[in-house]
Image 1 (cartoon, helix red, strand yellow):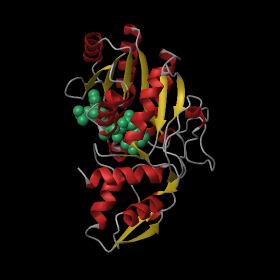
Image 2 (cartoon, protein in one colour):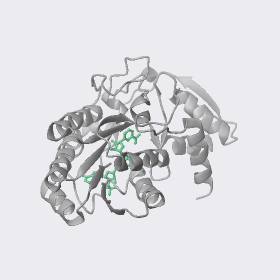
Image 3 (tube, rainbow, N blue to C red):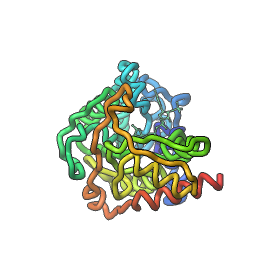
Image 4 (cartoon, rainbow, N blue to C red):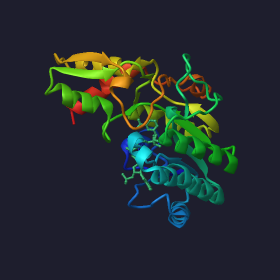
Length: 283
Ligand SMILES: NC(=O)c1ccc[n+]([C@@H]2O[C@H](COP(=O)([O-])OP(=O)(O)OC[C@H]3O[C@@H](n4cnc5c(N)ncnc54)[C@H](OP(=O)(O)O)[C@@H]3O)[C@@H](O)[C@H]2O)c1
């Protein structure tokens, strides 16, 4: 198979590039960052797709700064929605399949049980709205496209929560972390190892792909500090004491049922965190 990855220079994209040949050495993978192709420019996208002749396109490229999206609304929609539409149209013209990486932030967080794929979208902030609108537009362009929603990504390829906590814990005696937002931390390596077989299985429609289990950011931070053997005290706080520009869903756990239909089981988040910390300490 020939694969073109948009967003190959990002946290997930770097692991897709690393994991793909390990799982399918016969595939020909081209990775593109924003310097190779700006997805806001339909012409650049069409040219890149024609040149790389993919059977599958993985669209991981996005403007992912959730707070930044609130102040840079135009940029958020230009990249996350209109850029995705450019890629989808080029995929359709090429006869290529498309897997679009989306987010748990398309939900409002009012549920108390894991979200199924058909739960109505009700994003709270600009980032979530831009991704939710992209999902809708892509499925209008082709219902055969695949949307893989994930959550709370961490990994070696970029800025992430465990890295921030480890850096803070190295210099502070106490850290306050919110305990009123629950989700599923997801290791970019595990997500890449789910996306690759999804493409090989010709997956279509909406799929939820997160590491198993759930926690609050506070519990996640506790686990990080404890595994690192640090003595920093992690204290629970609430979102109203830690106000940020973008609202976040209070609960955004994604049900694994849609992924299980493809016989894919992602490891639990604690196991994933252990492997991340090993990778980080051996870099
Ligand atoms: N991070 C999370 O917690 C999280 C959670 C749920 C879902 N997601 C979704 O997962 C996907 C991957 O996220 P990530 O954390 O890997 O993102 P990331 O590390 O922020 O990387 C973003 C990627 O998008 C590319 N990009 C940005 N603007 C672009 C443009 N105008 N044209 C072309 N490429 C552009 C960047 O290219 P350059 O670096 O070359 O500029 C980079 O490769 C995204 O779709 C995101 O919405 C992320």
